[in-house]
Amino acid sequence: MISLSKIKGIDVSKWQGTINWNKVKNDGIKFAIIRASYGKDHKDPAFESNYSGAKKAGIAVGAYHYCYAKSTDEAKKEAAGFVSAVMGKTFEYPLVVDMEDKSLAELTKAALTDITNTFLSAVAEAGFTTMVYASKSWYDSKLDASRLMAHKIWIARYNDTLDYDGRYDIWQYSSSGSVAGISGHVDMNYLCTDIVSLKQPAKALQHNDKSCKIKNSPAILSVKDIQERLNLLYRLHIEADNKFGHETLKAVIKGLQIELNKLYKAKLKVDGVFGPATRSKLIVVKKGMKGNMIFLLQALLICKGCRLKPYGADGSFGSLTESRVRSYQKAEGLQTDGIVGAATWSKLLA
Image 1: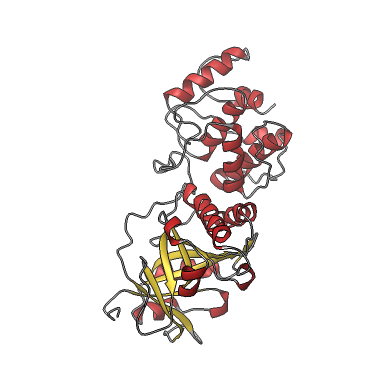
Image 2 (image 1 turned 180 degrees about the vertical axis):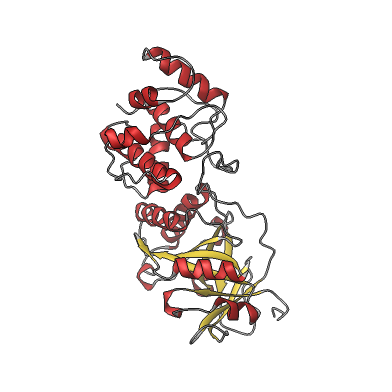
């Protein structure tokens, strides 16, 4: 039996209504895993308020996505929406895929495990620690635990003891808990292992943010890699066909517009059109800078045929990127200074 001295937590969504997080904290709750999204492109309307409320109260936070995906392709799309919902935030607990919807029960164990791994691989690629949530019966009959070793495990079993022989990190022991600050019942959990060294997201990849480099993920070296990362970062749905065409260029421009709006309050329309308004807001970038703006520069270089091995589009403007910028400038008849200003941006985006 899990001792009551173990760390106790809850998981919540919009269904808990308005939560008084200070009362929750004072009632002994140490962590909260908050629903951020569900299905494709559906953000939980209470996620932002729950996240900020828990953080302000000093409660450790994780987030989960309720999955409806019935194929790996659908899993990728749902994962992109989830990552978009949580991007820019930090978490002390993992990011979770909730695999329990009855509509998925018709799928085979192999198919469900493939969907789970596909979803969480995309989340891990964005820099987060990952976790699978399901009931004990699903772990026993619907998921291949031997293929989920890369992820933390959260298991639901409403009993005084958890009669499960596999590994697990969090045990959801009740769906009818009572916690101060929450009206009605709430799911209750125990932390059963030390969840430490959580990766933080590439998220802000904010300008000159030293934490922006995405670690423990393959280098982004090909046009296909870039297309997949653009979809993940900016909630796009371009085809990852490894071909640089109009749609991929438009996606990069949308990324630039989003970053300029976020970092510099540019107030640009995110339409993927490189017109006078976007051109006027572009910033000069050079060696030593980091962030999503640098990733987008590197993406354009790769799409234009420049090789960035072994680092790829890592969001860090180092010596290799500077060298490739110089080579590109020379080939295009531009000033060869390794600095990306208006003329170089305009040529890259043409």
